[in-house]
Length: 309
Image (cartoon, rainbow, N blue to C red; front, side, top):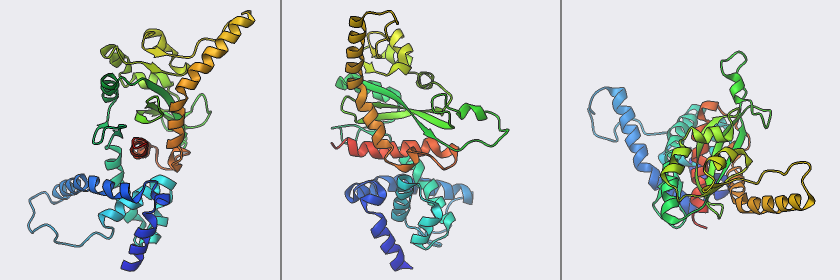
């Protein structure tokens, strides 16, 4: 059994399986070890209800050591494999892998997003992004993205909230912010698919942040035209389509302006495409209540790679 787990660790730690290099995997394991130990101590303390009666290390050992828990979680995030499949590789019960995922995934989601050229600095909130953009003079790119999720059970309150007006499917959507090179700076404002992109990001307080940071500028698509109307000196949306009776010169000028704005904004679409190389962000098959955590964990991992470019 020990040999089997060792072989599983060697094979599954390859970047094809985890989505990150072994060098980055080693750094990630070291980064997560302390918060994981702190959570475990807190959980065990709550379960005992009193102080330890014996020294640390007593009692049965984990069937999956911490390194294997991280690797198994990364593989599931990368390919959305059934937990039972990973359990076969490691020779443990399915519930052991599920428990490991529920321990590691929140730690990955809480890491935040790496910043290009700023080792050790990570952005966690929208306010962090605006402060960073002000300090570094970065022009932001905003875009919304949708991922299909499970349809809620019939008769459940709020079922229609997940039906996207664009995709006509049950979805969850998130807001993604990148810089001008397509490097992800932040994602969040994860909301049911029926909510408009602009409404979703407004619930995160983006209007107050534009007022607080008047130097920050952003390029957006037509879905954020309301922000562009309220902050015309900071937010640039595509030009409005001319009327039907417009002259040929007006139509030509509009097409050129639209294409120019689109080419300057396309980098955030490329950032979205990188995120969707991970299977759960193509179509999410898990429980909807874990989607936000999964989304943040994956984008945080992708940002580690893009920040090194």
